[in-house]
Length: 250
Image (cartoon, rainbow, N blue to C red; front, side, top):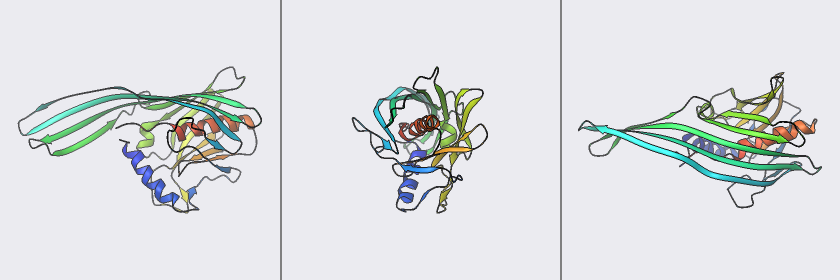
């Protein structure tokens, strides 16, 4: 079962995609949008394409982890507390028609608790889910290796903040203290939507300039500037991480 965030996102995406002109609102006139093909489903030999880019392979390992539960009864009510830790992983290679390539290694980590309160006739009175707010426990991590680079770019997205519909910074892509990008959620669409759920992400450089974005609407759309092929490959890889990461299991 998907998390509430992904259920709601699916409904919003279905509604928005029914409007042919609906797209995320990224306030940067220099960004060119490229529709993405191949993101739907988890088929064998999946290939994703957009603009001048194509994946050479996509490999996933399914949800791994553990869960446990304990509880007690007062005679009138039963209390059950469950805890779970889950992780899924993915690797993919992204190439261009001119020969540039990047390899990406991603891990999705989740830790959460469930509290159930039931009456003696087994009717649930209350059920709450607690996402671990600690970014080290509930994050999407990725290493992005560009060809001939000495070390990878490191990407971290705080899943808890995304699922709590945070409007603002939810992650970073970092090489060192002088080279980094900030990842922010995008809620605004055009035409304007009443939804407050994030439907995409934008990437800002250290000067606060928007240099790329990714829409989660329908099959996805990636927005890139026309210049700097190396930067475009890096941010295209980061955008695919956000499009391809597996949903968490509730």
